[in-house]
Amino acid sequence: MKRLEQRLWIFLLPLFLLSCPATFAQVPFERIVNADKEPGNWLTYSRDLQGHRFSPLTEINTQNVSQIKVKWAFQFPDDRTEVSPIVIDSVLYITGPNSAAALDGRTGRALDLQASDSFGLSLHRLRPHQSWPRRSG
Image (cartoon, rainbow, N blue to C red; front, side, top):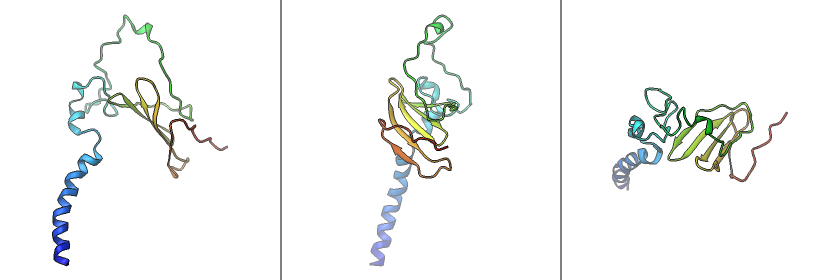
């Protein structure tokens, strides 16, 4: 029986290790390295590995910037939140104090909301139609 278990481990361990990168890596490193090929995405904190924080998109320019209108807004419970969102395939991933959200970039609809207490404990997922937990005090 012990020999069978060893053979099973020898077979299963490599399969498990090969499946880990696909399971846990949502954005392959190659996409981040080649960020300029996806100008509509903001795949990492500063958009690219060089930390440029510059969008190569040209739809907004000096001639039309005054015509920009707000299509939607999202408010975390803490109104002091300022974030640099990550944008992957039209989904905005944003974080706030003890909270995180995934939003549809076109509509602003919350796809996923999560919140925790002030110590980072009791992280719980909220359904998009639920409201944020009230702050005590």
